[in-house]
Length: 294
Image 1 (cartoon, rainbow, N blue to C red):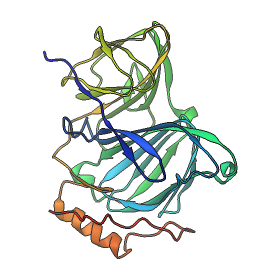
Image 2: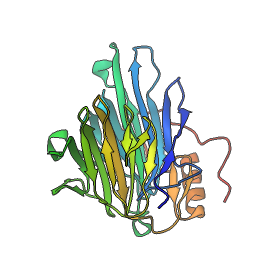
Image 3: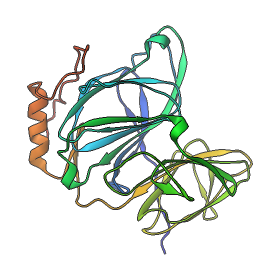
Image 4: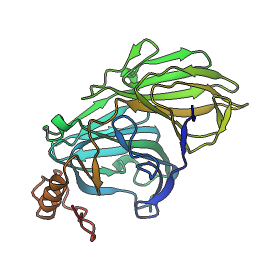
């Protein structure tokens, strides 16, 4: 037994001074279950002068999963969806064969300072569903199961855990938990998924008796669980996982696919503005200058 692989991630500037911690993909690990992308953003204070809006941009072959601890984001997409994303809700956008969306500051907060803090994941769709029709589903915070177990409060965001099931529908076995350990609290995490990883959001803790630093991702051995313990302060952590991917994925810019030629096609389609438009928006993010090379 070699123990979990510890990923420290790196800072990524998304523009306008907005920096995120990117844990996946990494050199050590490309995916955990269906998840091929893991960004932790904030806590960051958004001022009236901040330029953190994300203009319309495309996706294929994946589902974005947005979860906030604090703040608010307005989601708009080419299907006509309009949803204010708020703490505790799960927002699952299936890109499938192609979708365009923007993420912006709510109008009610344009002249105020507030804190944004959350996680954005990308889940690769199964090969058979990579070109499914796009969709967007918002699951309110009140519909997410929450339970107390041992020394922890657990929200079952996606999948099944401790006898509770999330209402969020997925296309493959998927796990996503929000776990809050009380000061000095402990939780025995069983092997809830074939592949599983733990992310320490806001503090250090003990993982199987060993120190585990904040802002790191511990990828457990296949089929393994873990013993978690908080120090003398409360700690929040996220658990992600699911069945291993059915095939390796290629990731370029905002596109994910098992086929390189599909990414080339998507890039051509976006360059020609053939992927749709977000109603009421005229801006769009152009392709990177360095194009994908199959």
